[in-house]
Amino acid sequence: MRVYRRLEEVPADFGPAALTIGNFDGVHSGHRRILRRLKALSEEHGWKPSVLTFHPHPVRVVAPERAPRLMTSPERRAELMGAEGVEQVLILPFTPTVALLSPEEFVRRILVERLGARAVLVGDNFRFGHLHAGNVRLLAAMGRELGFETEIVPVAACRGRMVSSSTVRELIERGRVALAARFLERPYALEGDVASGRGVGSSQTVPTLNLATAAEVLPARGVYLTCTRDLESGREWNSITNIGYRPTFGSSDQLTIETFLLDPLEGPTPRRIRVAFLEFVRDERRFENPEALKAQILKDVGVARRYFRRAGAWMRRPVGWAGPA
Image (cartoon, rainbow, N blue to C red; front, side, top):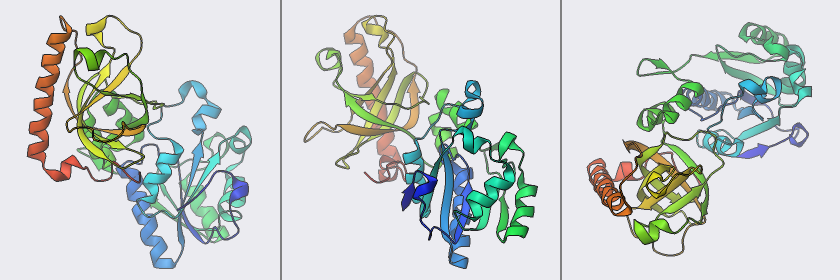
């Protein structure tokens, strides 16, 4: 897959493209429905399945006080879209200049002249151009004028709820990671560097990997069943993860994400990991002393081992969570 980060990088042979446009934060099941239709249409006509997305999120430019916290970086979005068969992604810097483009300028100058769109697939609530003045009716009318198809892909639903990035964010931040995984079609995951801890776990409870992440959306405080992947070597482990402030060891204003591996760590300690959240286990709480906390952790580990035994190998390596190392 080819990823371009500026309009000037786009080659002359980008088109003919079947194109979809949007932020695609999380790349949830609704986004995947569009991407799968994009791939099928591309194969039917010999076009290139392509995505135009933006960074930063447009709302951060036009109304920063309303900007959403994001679940996925542009790079992770591109990786997930590539897994659905997308061949090329333009991550367009969303600048004040881009924000001022009229809907007609956006379609003519970017979609047609630069990206060679032959088909444009969007959801029925798609808006574009300055002040969101463009809608799907205008897009379809311009398509008839400029020679591209416009296809509206219906919004996806899951368990009676419309699938949206805001809904998935809400579920994750409430700790409902198992339901969020249904909306995403994969477990939600955090990634980043393994940071040095204070050594308390190794000496008083159990040794853990401490994740330092730049993620903006975090699961609620508590203990979770997880899978952990070494992003450099590809090693994977069943695990259990605590998100919280370590109240047993005194008050702290620093949130920690600590993962205990259920299988022995053989070889070097990972430098970068991805932790996928499968199930909520319990709330974080303060224990009388480190020994009581350690006893609870061992109980949590027992819960995790039983869970993974019942779930079987398919759950131990959940489809779609890891991606390329």
